[in-house]
Length: 279
Image (tube, rainbow, N blue to C red):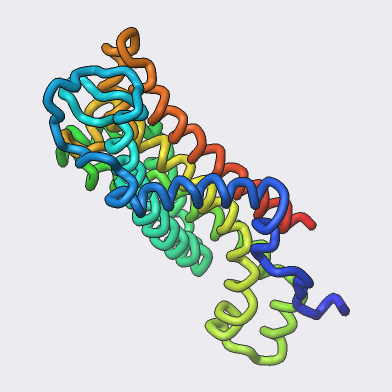
């Protein structure tokens, strides 16, 4: 391969997910996601059903994680909470990635656009995720929509700067300069050479962002500005369990384990993709 040739990968972009840490992450996230998808079939009770005489029961054969303070089955609520959390994450993160990536791409076209984009990113990054969440909840009210908006805004500067850096780096490569020298148009070069080679870091960041999205939703619902009761979410279930830990510890352990496993799974996926990029 000469210096003017475009690099060719001999392995698939996602082969890092078929072994090692990446595969473990895929299995963890896949099992939990399937549990959420099939919650209507797996949940022994309706997540909103108040079961007569089942107040704060310890784990037993009928209620594997016990019941909560208003007689609802905790396992059923956790399964439906998984569904709600992943729906928010898998919608908000791609939206943030697309919008942020487009802004980052536009910022490479002109110095004025670059300056404007960087100042916007600076403003967003000035707010920690939870401070941003509290601010938006005060303006537009709490709820699942607010959680999604917070995740989108938190991801904008991350993906924007990632795409900007990648495009600027790839644009200086010899094969891009050679294409321009022989008369290829800017749009052709951008579509054919720059973008395909600039998008490789996106896979790692998407996995990392999904883990952040799970944390943001759980944290917002925990402090009461996320998914609104009585709808279940992992964060709100954990919040409800705090006053009742001495009666039913499984009330908190169940959703905490799910949140920890989701975050761990997405991090392992990111490491698997990152390892493949380095190999």
